[in-house]
Picture 1 (tube, rainbow, N blue to C red):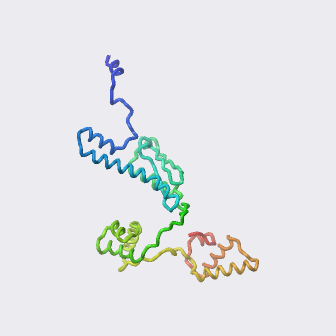
Picture 2 (cartoon, helix red, strand yellow):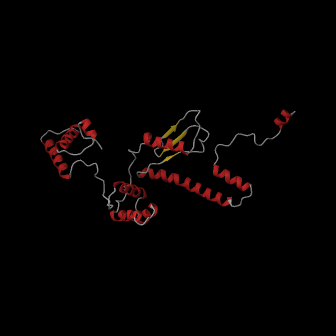
Picture 3 (spheres, rainbow, N blue to C red):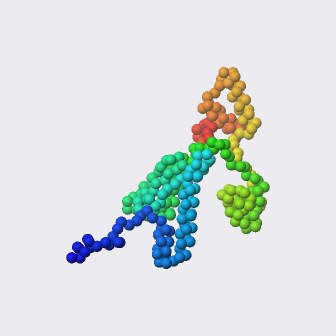
Length: 255
């Protein structure tokens, strides 16, 4: 009798659990059903943030095509009930992070580990397309950058506010302030480090180029591999500081 009633009655809680829902939306819905009017404002704000993030996604993808921005995306809601996490980049490549069936945890730590593993082993960041429109980052203003560092160190200004006031990169500002604190120097001075891996001076490069041109005119031109060997020998003869890879391969290599 009880079995017959169970089969013919509508039991609302006997249904497949929803796995593709937003926990914030669910909590707000529960508060609204309980009569909490203040949750309506939070719901509207949450929906606006969701729409703004959704609208920014295609803009980021387009920006990655014409700049050195690298964009990845992953859908947490679709994959919440599975032990796998799919990651896609701006080059339309996919990567699936697989885990054992008996390990189904997927908190912020697990997701961060998957993303870190992807960025350090699978992401093709080095071959990102450069700007097709010739867009380049403006050079850092030395005076403005030093003033921003002074505001952070002396005036206790936050990194975000100092970067906004002096129009400099917050990440670059944080990196140089940390480097300055670790160095124990008395005064901070910003130095451009574009030529940190430069081996030869301009005069030495000119001499090497002149030699190669003269050899080519005398029909003793060198192949690219021979030029790299010559550059290594030239650097070693002049006691230049170069990469360990040069010494291993006995020829010039990219730093």
